[in-house]
Image (cartoon, rainbow, N blue to C red; front, side, top):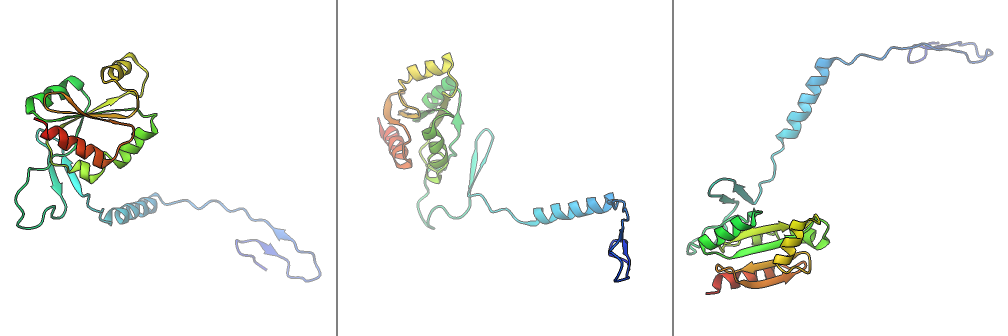
Length: 199
């Protein structure tokens, strides 16, 4: 009797079952078939259309924002153009730009080891109400993660006792609001409106 796989066994019911082992060589994989299968898989994965992102910021001299959908009802009066929320990391440059443009400056001091900083990055700074807010401003992020003289200097300069701390300065550089710890989107927007309205 021939067994599947090429082995054989005696068919005599009185004799003990004896098997003859047969060694098989591994079947070779045809490289062309493998490449064809991998290509088909990649094509199938790429065929799915990605979901459109609600906001697309184009990096350049003057960032443009593309909004999916109609942000305002038809016939509404035109409002100031949207500006994407882009973080500056150079403090003198951010201050100079805010003064030159006459706009508020948002200063956010955070650290990677701070759970509240991580929560704000996830829940506040990525919120569409922040990303699509219409008040012209300059946003500055200062990283206090590493315990370096620079981090201590920034903390002392801005009087930081809690991480994160968010300050909103008016166009003249005066502090209008100081938000300690993890604050909400509403608190940030209220501080920005207050700084923009401050004469």
